[in-house]
Image (cartoon, rainbow, N blue to C red; front, side, top):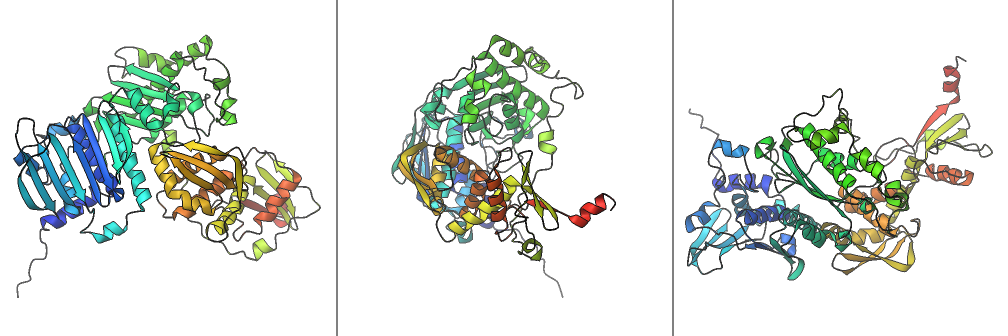
Length: 609
């Protein structure tokens, strides 16, 4: 008996669907690929049209160089690209798309229509593809350039379609990708139309004009130019003056060879340049571009190409930080008062005092700065033992705390028998800990973590049952957000209402805060919303929580009493009483202990009794 072979080649359409899973994860993935292809085609005008948050339609229309009939057909084959001729080309890539996967992946999971015409051709080409199969190919009359439409995303993979989020959430991701590509190419006109309504209309212009178009006119007089050229790389762009620092990390963009990237260590370098100029819990704004030899980077380390690897990360860190420091030193930072600014930031020397000549000298006196500004000295940064950067990698190698899933701990007899002695004064230690005597020892309570647990249970009840009371604002506060943040806030409005916020849209990217939860301090409405958005965006992606659960956790963390805050006897007593009425008083929602118990017998043993 002959046993048949069992290994077979997958059909092309199935192989393409599997490959598409890496490239096209959601509508925004397709938006990114199509916009980048249009930019690569030399377009000066690019229009994005979406319906139903990209689920029903994503269309990109450009006036680029177009394609011939053969090229139009070949573009949908896997690994077909005009940008790679030999293996060496992989190491000097200057275009956005290059792997030849995008159109093949899009055609595998949607119904695609393509119209394209070159300038030298009288007629163009029309192609219709579904499930990787060409249904129609014919000549057509069309404008110069390319128009590509993808309809009914994941129509043939219903399981994938079911995993898509709400329209508001998917639209937020689309806006993020649109902003990143349009920020990378300020000399190209971009527009975004959603369900027939124009959301963005970005005229071609300078980099500063594009930044203001996207981030808001309030940045107009608050940007500091960064422009450094070296033999190794060029850095240019803008950083916000210290008074633009906010509690949110949203307005931060890095581009390498016109490609948007995410880089924790380059972000850390910029933050370090602002040290002493902004509050520790605030984030500077920046849009920075780095141009360097493509052979010095590997952009193919991740399917989205947003994470890249530099050949020498230490040099990149040094250059970025030095360039920003140099820019801040060159400009006299004397901002006008901003009455919406956090008081902690307003009180810093960098805000309230002028940037004197002595301070400029100090900022540019370091060995790092001198090395950076000397011509042809790119690779002469000091050795690790002498360098100011010798601890730069600590930021990445330090163990990172991973948020744990909140596993309710039974309110067992151990907690039930704990009794704080009512007639014994409570002691606050280092404005962080509360020492409370018990019937058989004492407790060391962390005030911030304890309050976080109390608030978490309070907000949880509100979010999943009885709504939190709202305090109406006598004078409603208007907040303007960047496109992606505005889309996120729109999506969160029903969940915010459950925990006491009353927020409504009042125009494109503008919201009106009519009321806030009763326990949020009046006057902090804007900061509270901005911080909620930032915390929500950077919530641990390793754990799956509902939107409402994320909000509850973010709110409890945001509104908890902070370390360093002095508490009265009454405030400490109320906090401890509230803690021990919680279902899980001994841990925070993320698993950190809220208190430590020192029993009398343990104390006796410590002293040899």
